[in-house]
Image (cartoon, rainbow, N blue to C red; front, side):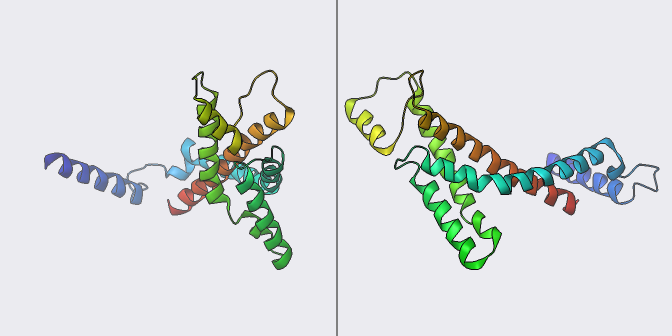
Length: 176
């Protein structure tokens, strides 16, 4: 009970200092190093967001067609749906329609590819299933399509996460 009360009092003190900081001679957070860092991140984030918006549909399409398999089929379907929506409505934002779902699917795909790379001896049935869905081991004899598919998968995931983080930082700055 005491810890809860102390935490609430500390939150109250911090909130009062933030609201009435000028009275006590404190500098608002917008003019501190943290405030400058957030503005730099916001400016850099807006450029990253624009670059992501322009490059992500292409990377998504490369992911879907570079190594045709069941595991890359959702990326191809997502690209097709986004392109058809864009052509029908002339709205560029329709390209980004399925990115949240594809982000979770990309995470799952990266996890499955990583698990398949581990030096574990799989049964012949599991190897057959993995080959059927499109999992592959990356080695020195890998085809360029497999390498391109895995690189574009990781790039897609990183760029989607970056665009969501950038949007989150911009929203955080707007609310504070």
